[in-house]
Image (cartoon, rainbow, N blue to C red; front, side):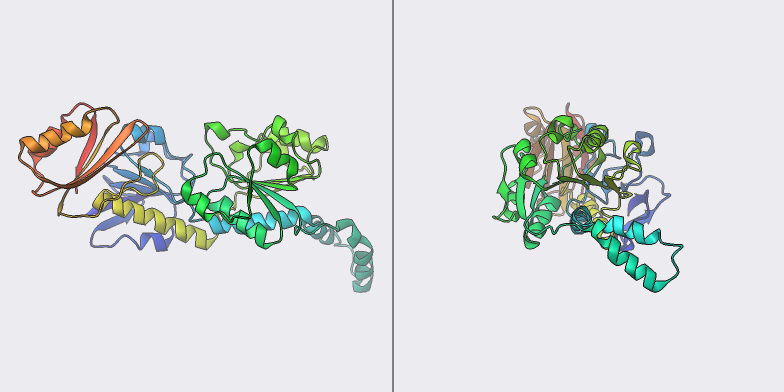
Length: 389
C-alpha cells in the first residue's frame, strides 16, 4: 500500500486516480511515499525520510526545494501544459483589455451612483463613450517570448484573431517547434521583437537566466505605445523599471497577474490576483497529470515531466525491477551490473539516462530482488538510492 500526503486541496478528479486497493491518501499521514501539492511552500523539514517523489499540480516548482531533492535522489514532478488553455484564455482577455477602454468604461459607469434618471444616464453615456474608444487587436503585432506549451497556444490564438505574431525562445525544444504554427516569425533577439511589437506577452519559467529579464534596458527597446503582458512569473519583470517606463511615457500599459506594491494604483497598470490557472478545468488537469506521474513512478519507476530527473520510461518485461539513482560519474552502471553478475542475476532489459549531476537506471531482472542484492548496490560509492519495484 502506497501512502500519498496532500498539502493543498487537490482536485477530486486527481485524487480519484489513486485506486483504493493500492493507495492511501490523506493530508495527515505517517511515512508517506510521495507528497502531492499545489502552491504550499514546502520546507525541507516537512519532507519525511520515507518520501520517494514529490508531485506539483501546476507548472512552477519555486515552492519546492528542488536542489535538495536532487541530492537525495528524489524526483520532483510538475504538470506542464495542463493549465495552458486557462492561461491562454486569460492572455486573450488581457489583449482585449489592453486595446479597448473596457476597465475604464466599467469603472466610469460604476461611478454614476447619483444618477437616477434613465434617460439622462443614456444621454450622458452617449456623450462620454468616446473617452473609452480603443483599437482592435486584428492587424496588430504580438510578440511572444517563450514558445512552450502556453506560448505556442497563445501564438496560435493570436493568429486566429488576425494578429501578426513574432516569437522568441532560445531554448525551443523539438516538440515545441512542432506545435508552433509556421506563420509565427521567429526572432533572433529580444530587442528586435520588442521594437516591432504592439503587444508583448511573457511565457517563461522563473530561473536564474530569466530573473528581471524585462528590465530598463529591454523596456527602452519597446514602442512607447506598446502593452506588456506578464502571466508567467513575477520575477521575470523588474516592476520598478516598468513603473519608471510607464511614468516616462516609454510604455503605454502593463497587464500582469503578479501585483507588487510599486504598481498598485497606477492608472497605466491592470493587476490581477494570480488567477492565470484558476479554473476548475486547469486544476483538474494538473491534479490528474501529477497523480498519474506519481503512480507511474512509484509502481514502475518511470519518470515523465520531472524538473530534476531525466525522462525515462521502460515497459515492464519481468515482475522484478530495480530503480537506481546515482551520481553522474564514470563506471557507475558497470559497478551496479557487476553486483548483479556476482550474484548470477540475469538482466532482461535496462535503460540508463543522466541529467546534470545524477543518473537514473531501470533494470529488469529474471530473478526476485533479494536483500543481499539491494545491500550490494547500496554499498557502491556514488549510489544515492535504490528501490525494488
